[in-house]
Image (cartoon, rainbow, N blue to C red; front, side, top):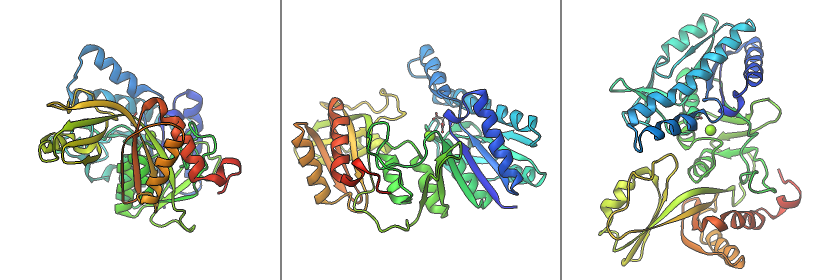
Length: 388
Ligand code: ASP
Ligand code: MG
C-alpha cells in the first residue's frame, strides 16, 4: 500500500479533544487504503517548559541531559496518540526516534541526521499498524539520544518519508500554509499555493517557522514534495517542490526574525576570522569595510552564553527582516527596502543582498512597522484583495 507520512505540530495535539480529532483523521486516511506513519511534536509549549525547568537548576545545563529531557515531550504525544488510535479500533504502535533508526551525528541539541534505518517501521506497517513516531529526536553514532534543533519534528517527517519511499509527506499544524509574510504580523499576507525548495529554505532560515530549514533541504535532496497544511484538513495548504507551476513573481515572501544580535568589531575580516568561525551556523551575514567588521547572528535556540564575542566587539540587539524570491538578492529589491524604511523614518543598521535574499538588521522596536510597509510595497495587490 502507498505510504503517507503525516506530521502533527504541538498545537494540534495539545488537548484531549485534539488528540482524538487527529486519531480520527489518521484512522480515516488508513481506511482509504494507505499505510500511515504519524510524526508528532511535543504538546503545546511542553518543550519550552522542560527547558525552563532545567535552567532553574543550572544556567548552562549539559546539552546531553537537555536532549534526554526534551525528548520526553514527544514521548508523551506519541504514546497518547497511539492509545487514542487503538481505542477507536485503529491498531497503532509508537516508537522513539532511536527505535526507528534515526541515526545522527553527536551534536547535542542540534544534531544532523546521517542515516535512517526504518526496519521496524516497515515491519509494523506490514503487520497492519499505524506507526506513530516521536519527532525531533534520534540516536547518535555514540549511542546517545539527540535532538534535531527546535522545530525538528519536520525533519523527522521528511527523513522518514524519504527512507520509506512515501507517496506524500504532510506537515500539518494550526497554520494553514506558507504565507507571503507571517499573517499574525501582516494583515494583508496571502497564502502561497506552491513554493520552491529554495525560497522555502530561505524563508525558514530568516524566521518562518512553518517548516524547518533542515527539513526543506532534506526534501530537496530527496526530491520529496511536502504539503504544509492545516491539521483539521480545512484548506489546500502550500506545496513545497522543485519548481512551482505559476510564473515566478520577483519576490516570494518576507520574514521577520526577532532576537538577533549585530556584532561589530573594530578590525578587518582577517583580524576577527576566529570569532566569525565560532559563530558557525548561526551567522546570517558578515560584512566588512576593512576597518570595521559586522556580523548578524541568529540566536534562535542557542543560549546567549555560547559564542560570546570577544575583544572589543560591540553587540546590539536587532531583528532581521528578509525579502526572498527570484529577485530577492538584487540591488533593486535592496534599494526599495532602504527607500521604504527611510520613508518611515526608521534606521537600517546593516544590510546584505545576495542570491535570492536581501536581509536587513533593524531596531527591534521598529521591525514590525517596517515589515508591514515592505509587504505593502512588494505585494500592493494583496493588501486589499488576495491575489492567489
Ligand atoms: N518539540 C520540539 C520543539 O518545540 C520539536 C518540534 O516541535 O518540532 O522545538
Ligand atoms: Mg514547527
